[in-house]
Image (cartoon, rainbow, N blue to C red):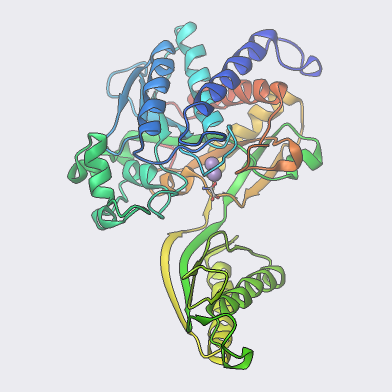
Length: 430
Ligand code: HGY
Ligand code: MN
Ligand code: MN
């Protein structure tokens, strides 16, 4: 932890750790399926290359590097006693298309940096440490998120093996091609009794810390989310020959629904996004016969999330009726709203105070999803947020962080872990 006074900011050693963590984010940014951007999806060649690269850093930090049956990168650091329970640290290594280089990745690098410090000083805690680089938090390839962390949490569903990517490859086929046994994914599950808790460091992916001029924040909880595949079906036809009032234009039904998402989100205080839209048959001189689109809706509570969807759905059904269209819906993903665990969060708060001097660390509810949502089914969690630069932009190449903030985050993450070791020993936090 930084040895200098808080007013002087992080120590040179912490800044050096931060520089290395950011350098590693740059190295992983170069492992991408995109020519001029960052994209690394589950069970891709890039996923394999990233895991191999992260394994070298895990080993350099004094851990045993391995890959679990779900394709998560894993690092094991033993506790003071054999068979001690473990504290989980981590985040994800996969990305969205044209991603930033810190979403998920930085959290894994911070976890490795802290274990490296423990190893350097020969520190053995009353619990072991498991560093996890989750393989599929974003759900880009198969449409269902948190696959890697669900496997560790014991909530993996074999029915997901039939999920298909855009090329028609099933998850089962992709796992086998990656060298994993599709029928053994659930073996990645940890026994809740063997886990002390989970800590995740992550960029905020929003502007709150930036606007408040705070380098770090503690996460109170994570919004509940639902993702849908929606569609409107009408009648394709000649863009010239069909009179306007005779048309059953599927795109217009989808467009009305997208506007309803915005209106409901504003009135209900939730967040709703139509991020994908496919117009078929997709020609300038053909009236759209079908419009397929995604819906991502999130709220502080599951009830609020579900109410918002019902209001959106009602407007979609009304628009479809008025336009003589067929509206269809398919629920693709559900993540319940979760709260962080009080005592783990107190350790994070105390750590923020210790490294920044802030008497009241800022508390933020995460509107972004994180692996912690899945791991919450296994063990309690706490999260440390790091200020996002550039207006808080994320899921975008302009994602940015400050070196000093990352140094403070490594110090705070280490301090939180030491405080948990001191407060709880090997007792399970739950
Ligand atoms: O979508 C999310 O909130 C996360 O970045 N996967
Ligand atoms: Mn993300
Ligand atoms: Mn993330």
